[in-house]
Image (cartoon, rainbow, N blue to C red):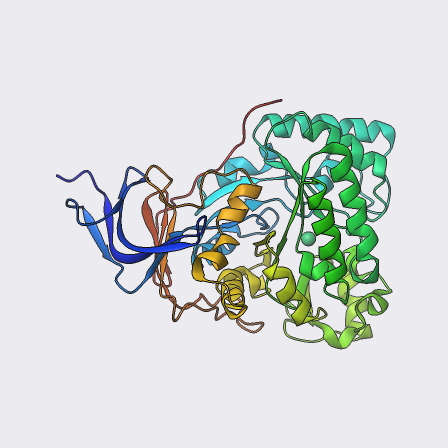
Length: 448
Ligand SMILES: [Zn+2]
């Protein structure tokens, strides 16, 4: 009997870390890549990959699956695109571990969590998002954060736009805790979108300089693609030249999506985005697909604050510019409410890769933004193809690979996927997710 579980035969193997493509077979055994080469041995199962690309599974460092009724839908939508590892808990919403892990012990893909600033605030009894924390509450949040990092959280996330009066002291007290753990980062949904995004990015670069911590600016397109993106990218470039450890993520759409009751939709948004109700589409619930007017806005803010709104307000050309930057990781910012929401949950990776190909990148160069870079940003060992590496793989047709999800049908799976492997097992065949959950919860250990 062969010791090879799966032999992927005759594909074009992509190495995003060294901009190379080679025709070779990939042998998988015991959840890892046994070898990459030619014509050796038998296997329990052979996948004919002739004419297809064989790439490392995609890594999505920015998802949300922590507060929806049905986390399976988000994970399966990601898996069908080729995402094999994801980091949840972004934008301040990462739950404290003990609340989530019992129900999520066997995910569909490999899943790690960030600890959310909002959840820390709620855990010490702050129920007003507009109120800064007191010194005593800051102390309570810091010790909770320490416990979370101790028990395997990947870092800390902020949603400063959702808690707009968070004080610099509150932020610094938490960063101090993160500094005592190795390989943890801080993901920030910055304080302002629109014209004030420049000062909001400068604020974060300031913390990054002070602390030496790694920062990830969240969905940078949706915060800055209102005429300020180029200015922000040059700020980031200059900071990186000085040694500041900052990266960012972006999804490939010119519309964002969040809850109508959040501070993002407080009065005054028209001036920030240069668009009003006519650009705001209901993304979930009974009114899905309707655009807002004054009356519906008031009603939904009051009666259904968790309802999702899709805001068609960013400049598409700036979003493309953001995606093309060498420090931009493709990330979905997936969030759904009862299976409804923005098409990014099901379409981000094929859509972003297609844009990068149109911008002139080779397949390995485009896939770098979905594999090598996010792996580096999160200190993960996945995102690469080599003997001994975890067998997270995506096998797809380069010609037909494209997103199909739309604002009407947000969960349509992409076209062009042949197979997705998670931890050495076939998890997706074509558009179908197989019944067995093959992912693992990821934890980070250690202390400085
Ligand atoms: Zn966010």
